[in-house]
Amino acid sequence: MLSLSSAAIFCRVVDNYGDIGICWRLARQLQHEHGIAVTLWVDDLHTFRRICPQASIDAEMQQQAGVTVRRWRDWEGIFTANDVADIVIEFFGCDIPPGYISAMTQCDPRPVWLNLEGLTAEEWVEGCHTLPSPHPRLPLTKHFFFPGFTSRTGGLLHEAGLDKERERFQSDSAAVAAFLSTLGVADADMAALKVSLFCYPHAPVTALFDAWQAGSESVTCLVPEGVATDAVHAFLDQAPQAGATRTCGRLTICVIPFLPQQDYDKLLWACDLNFVRGEDSFVRAQWADRPFIWHIYPQDENLHHKKLKAFLGRYAATGTHDLADFALSWNGAQSPEKVATWWPALRSALPAIAQRCPEWRGAVLENGDLASNLLKFAASQKAVSARKKV
Ligand code: TRH
Image 1 (cartoon, helix red, strand yellow):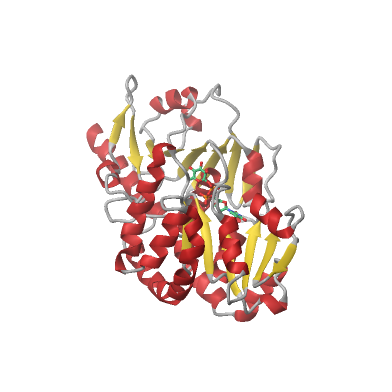
Image 2: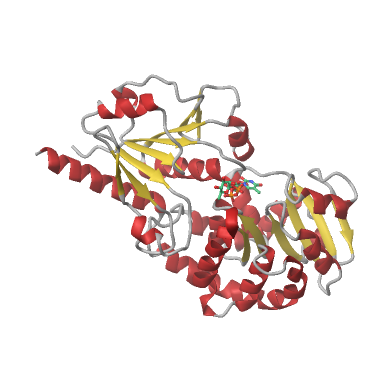
């Protein structure tokens, strides 16, 4: 019997919001679109509440958007076969509790056990996607599942109704203006170039602010509270709390609240250019149909520059050199101050880059979406183990 009706996702928040951001998105999609009963185990409910404000930080177990969210306290838990889901997903190789693993061995049939890995555009992932990793002692096999941009990877998270929802919003200028005004954008600033800014603290933000301030066009930059705090503080000349705003030269900065995850999508849809980072906001920017600049998560020995170049090699292949130059400086792979030099060229290229967005989105989505691909793979594994038993 090929029953795959439940899934457990184990999420350890290493830092920031991407770990829980990705797991929460996957959990909701498996539940809403595929009817899977999902339990999301997370070790940091404070971080979860930043992206899902209705969540409790005290509850051991709670229901959110149809998903059972459980506090993952430690590695000590005792589990039985009844506690084990049909699909067990560990995010980024977080080790799941030994008690849960031993309960998995008591299940008949065994659950499908996946390690959902991080996103990279590098070619090597194609050789590693879905590779098996047999447990050294127990009769269990875990498989690697890699998100990615090609048909030989697991694809990217993308909800079925997302494009329609975005198109509806973007074609309704009153809705866009209403949304932006709830974030503190004044009527007079609606016509400016609207930019959202989400980056790591080391981004050369001050150099960019200087270029915008001295530029020939009005720019309204929306910065979530807690992002680029030093540069924003210096520009505002006051603590960068949500609601703070200041105009200097051609630049207006509005500090906005850190938004619930669904509203963050709307922010990306409402802006003309988005600065994103990490993994999840980076993927969401690709679905927004707007140009974006990626601040990649920094790694030792500048490994991230290799990953950035691999992505730019795919994305900027059709001649968006200005975007590549700017992105390399933004990420310190070229002199960071050069962002000011590259900005005019990037600004001129934005309409052409924007025109290419649907083509890129379509090409990536030809590979299907990650949640559906993951379920297809899980079903194939279930079928393999059923055949082995016959
Ligand atoms: O926050 P990030 O930098 O997260 C991560 C982690 O650092 C992680 O350890 C690392 O492995 C990974 O990056 C690559 O960036 P990311 O991935 O974009 O996650 C941010 C999440 O926060 C995403 O789900 C969008 C959400 N978000 C909101 O919900 N509201 C907001 O206002 C903003 C700015 C983001």
